[in-house]
Amino acid sequence: MRALLFSALLGACLSVSFLSVQANASVSPTGQQWQGQGVVQKIAPQSVVIQHEAIPALKWPAMTMPFALSADVDLRAIKPGEQVTFTLVRAGDGFQIISLTPLR
Image (tube, rainbow, N blue to C red; front, top):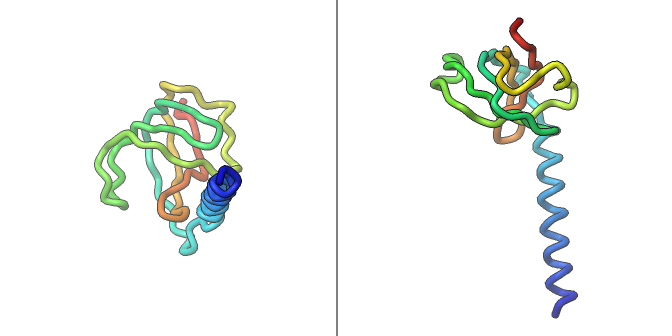
């Protein structure tokens, strides 16, 4: 019984990992990009939380939200509390930042 439960849990974990990788791989088939500006609230290895201004092209009001990061984004020059501009593309069911630049 334990072996069956362990196998089911392992299978579920691997499925979720595969879906997550697959979602990141399907980036903006239309090539459409959107620009935003805001303040970095939190930085994680593969994501960033930004309190951004309205993005009219997406019909988004100003809000604070997390974004996945493209592998090409270099976070070494970015700190929480810093104002940034960013470029978004569709990635799976969400959006991904492909460019993140501090405003100095």
